[in-house]
Image (tube, rainbow, N blue to C red):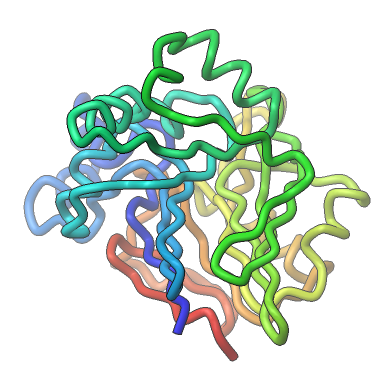
Length: 257
């Protein structure tokens, strides 16, 4: 049975923040319920594993999951918290003499190439603009608005009788974008705050209050919130519907009805 595992569910800075003594960061340093690595997941199938994003916590995520190699990964966008682990992955490929495959839209691959021009010695780049097939899943790509940070990408995975979307970074989706999110069994959506009060023009990710309004329109069967900042305390009982929950590190989701 195919399974998705949450490797990281934190926002761009993770939790705890090194400078912060708030209740959430303090708890994250002790019992660690709120400790959050940068957002990433793995999708395990009978035909192998596909990882989504490769951020600065890649080594800790790999060690925590008990994996010593990564053969193929899919990148949502070329921001630090989603791609900073690529040099470490490439170095692992160099030492094991097994090249990895990096799937991403062309514009994302171009940005990675500009930032890390040496990676193609160890990684094979595959443009994913027109989608890809993996482990029996048909994967399609949608460019999504990422607020002040420009754009990112969401990925829709479809098999007979099941479909889900992974979208860690987006805000204020337009009508065309929302169509990509319709008729889902599962949506994994980034929500950095419960209710973010900063000026909208300074923001880049949905908060939970806004996301709940979005869910009323697109109506997925189940939704999991990820990419959470130190504003979110998982010990609190947020007013969420029964079909909506917060992710946690190591959370396993069976990709079946």
